[in-house]
Image: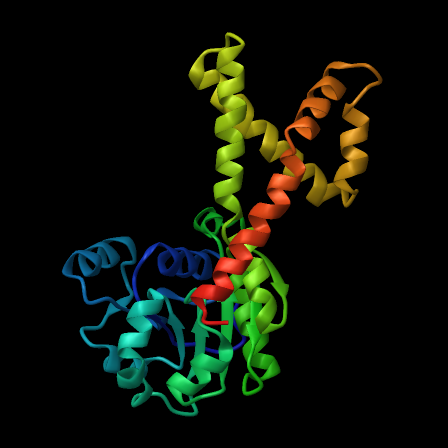
Length: 273
């Protein structure tokens, strides 16, 4: 997708998520390299960014980033933003669209801290690095429809996008933000089960990962309910039903629900809600 107008895109922070978004924007032709700037105080990060993104600009001060760019992605840790918020607020004016991927900091707090209501908050997840992420997006009242559309294009370049109210981003955090860790644990456990039954470790891990990948694609691409898809695998008195009986016995379904609940609650706590 090509942008309808030239956008100057700046990243405050040069970590994994910032680089994932920059890569997605470039690969989808949403923006060109000469319109991207990064600021990161770490010399190591600056060197890495120069190597990874030739043609982009690495600025030496946050103020310079706001001078050069109209759209700024806030891609720093919450404690860092709280520390520098007042400083960068001095550089923000009406031309700036602020896109925050800072975990736990609500739109209300961002508006108060930065002195602007032209803010869009995003909760991405780590698979964005492979352009198969799942992101929740919430916009403040000052963000225009064009602002929202542009951010949707940006996040769509690295995966799926769902629009939610700001308060629901805590639930997005609990589900898809933290969710990759749940998936990794399931893959690891399935692989251990295969090894316990005699499969070689590498083979078992590949089978487990591919199996969950295939199951996820079936849900997304068929549009059918996972319960219906499960029932098609589970023949009467068969191997799958024997396995499902054990999963229910050990409350795996309830454990996953409670995991999302716990992560959502913790997100609210960290956000001061």
